[in-house]
Amino acid sequence: MAIGVIAKLAIQPGKNSEFEGIFAELQAAVANNEPGNNFYALHKSRTDENEYVVLEQYVDQAALDAHGASDHFKTIGAKMGPCMAGRPQVEYVDAL
Image (cartoon, rainbow, N blue to C red; front, side, top):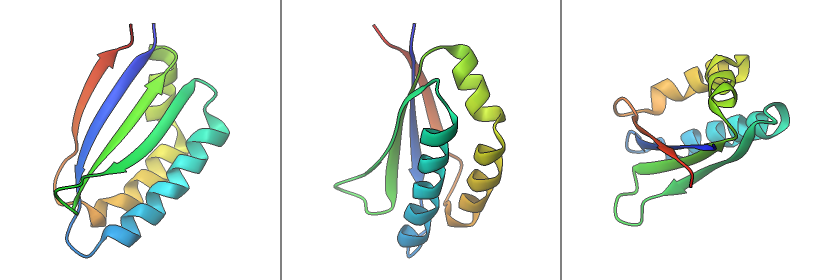
């Protein structure tokens, strides 16, 4: 069963371009290195310019675990830290 991830991210004001650039780098690394990832997409709120949602889907728990353990997630993800305005809110859902 595929596993979905919904991650809500609050970004510090004025850090949008920097954050979006770093995310694009991470998105490319996921696409190129994670065959168990079905999609990894960034969305920006229409009502709050500093709120983003990442929608992700993995073929199974092993693929999700591999994502979290990957070097690119750890290194590129760490570059996002200075852009963040708090911890991400993450929800895991099962595809039907």
